[in-house]
Image (cartoon, rainbow, N blue to C red; front, side, top):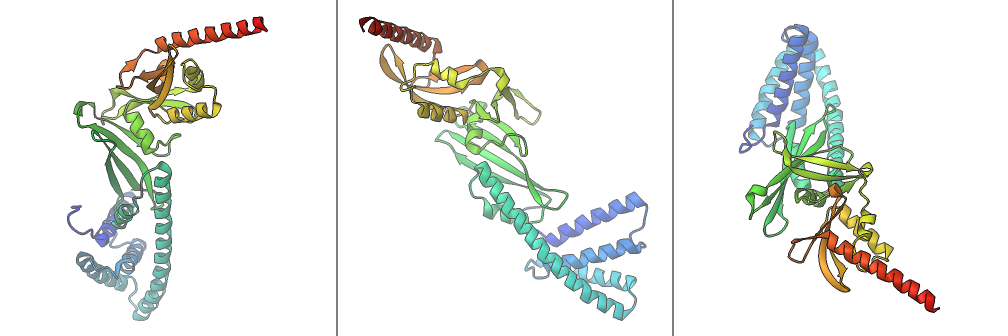
Amino acid sequence: MNEQFPINRVEIEFSQWKAREERFSTLFSITPADNKSLLAEKLRQFERIRAKYKSSKNIEEQHSLRILKMESRRISKQLYPGLISRILRKIIIASQNQISIRDDIKKADKNFQSLQQQLQRFGFPDMSEKLKTRIEKEHEKFSLPLSYYINEKEKIHHNLSFSKNAEGSFELEGYTSSLHNNDAPEENRQHYFKNGQEYNFKPHEVYNLLSGRSVHHNESWFQLDFNDKDAAGNNHLKEFRNGYGYDLEKTLKAVPLKATSNQFEIEKLKNTLKQGDRVSVVLVKNGREHPFYIEANPQFKSLTIYDQHLRKAQLTVFKKDADTEQKQSVKRAIKSKIQQ
């Protein structure tokens, strides 16, 4: 349906019934116009639609409602020839429809609140107005786009996909996230994150994955493989489980970090690295302190180290310095004991 025109919800629901009617006709080899059971269900659906949208200000919907009203009268006379039986039925059905509509409103509100809470848990910003507008359009499926700049060069785009389940409630199916670099368009990356998996990455972690860094979730490390794409252009998500043997704390202790004796700071640093962040640290080299950046690198069971200009530095150099410092510390301890 063309989005530039107002959505005709009456027409959408009528089309849904029409598809259902045709399915019944095929499955049970019946003629809908001659089957009383199917005609009765059709009449109930038409009356429910009329009751649901009777207050609509949409001109197209009003026109559709008038057509449904005439069709409902025709079917009602066919099924219930007696005037009194039609009047009594109309009173009963009107009451039932009001109860049904109130129940539908409560159900829709509960569904809306649930989706809002889910988006908040995932870390997406408030999208309540957009979400409510799209739900009210009564589509079976819809998507919500969300774009923002990470910095002056990088822009991230999320496309959240929703669909109705068998109970008629909307669910978040998942979202496709893509990272665009204005300076290097050829490095654009994307991945579809399906909802309901063991891991649900937050937008901040998604950005880190699309940037090539690793994120820790549920006892596993994850990293996108930019050399492996599926037919839809999504980069493959690699997983390194605990059994792979990557020990982040042990790896950190092998590097001459400043103030590594503070366990609270170590835990804070580990948690930040597990989110996929590139962290600013101070390393001790030749007895002097130097600012560097580090990232977790589970695939190679190490850390990726960058200098202030984000150029990669060799880890082996720091390991040698750390070994030297450790040997000197041992020598100083032995010498102190001898003097005592």
